[in-house]
Length: 447
Image 1 (spheres, helix red, strand yellow):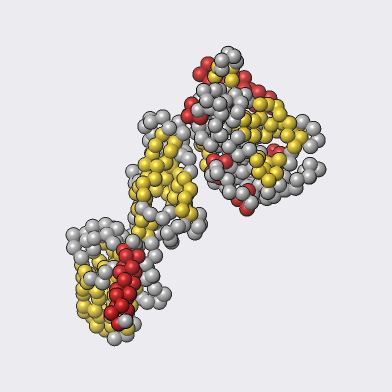
Image 2: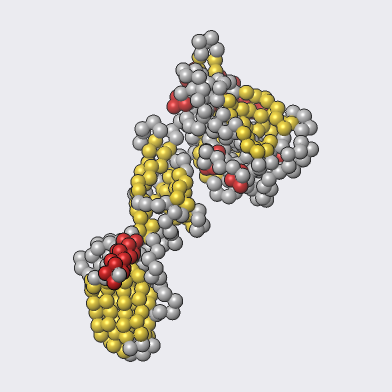
């Protein structure tokens, strides 16, 4: 029994050592375009949705390190040890406060308990400054032992110095904080946190990637190159800071993505939920995640707005298009040869040139329908997503099958006009009257 207990203890120690050995994960970002062309990188936003922090990585930096908790605090409460910066690139400074002049023994150990550097001598009363250099990027533990007690702090090295060294610099000196490495996160992170990544160029924004981060990996940020961004405004943002690509189609500048805001243009909140009664004229948007697990990510599908909310949801400088403005879009696209699709009846269809290249249910093979061979879609760059609709936040339909967009034009007292695409059709349908209480997608048009 004693031998078995020793074996079990050994296994437990090895397991703990292995867990501690994974002290960080590294993300490497790459830009990709849908047409294989070159795109000048600018920056990458990294958001931790679980812990509500965000960071921006600026090109040419494309590698980001997330530090995992080790069980040893970076700076223990009242232990009198200050490390700046931490994490660090091979070299850092440590300030040790001592209540009196006393002899101290200091040691640096790696995660396996091996001593990497040692220093001993007198600490002066007050602050004592040390420079620490480390040759290998990993986690270390600095231990300071005096007659007053033993104190420890975790150090995270991400670079390579020439040697492992603890060097005394003197007493009672201020530390000027070093600049935090751009590629190393100073924020809290744990395996499985919900993360969101998005890349930026001077003219475009990539699709957002949202995932639970569990390991080091290469992340490909994809830029949709269909269509031409509005020349003087390639991107725009709403009042909550959500950023959208734009697309120029004829003389009109459109949002290339579905609206995601929960604010009216005056900054007030759009209510969540809504009644299923056609007599209800209150504005709302659907909080679909409470009831429904959609296949299409929120970053692409956007919010669903009833007509009363859609009227005031576009940010300043933009508006909900009218019937006549949808007509302008239809007429221009229909007049351009490169946007047309002919079926065997020799009719002209434009649905494929407006529909996105993903998420559509399959249409007839070889046809001109929005769901037919979707990789050939989106010649205009409008990128219509088949988000479907909602009703009262608890009823959803046609995901993957239809894209519904409100117009500002009223049809009757309880209906308003809409423009929509369907996966089994080659037409852009408008004006089509729908109940105002339905939650549909919104595309804004620049004023």
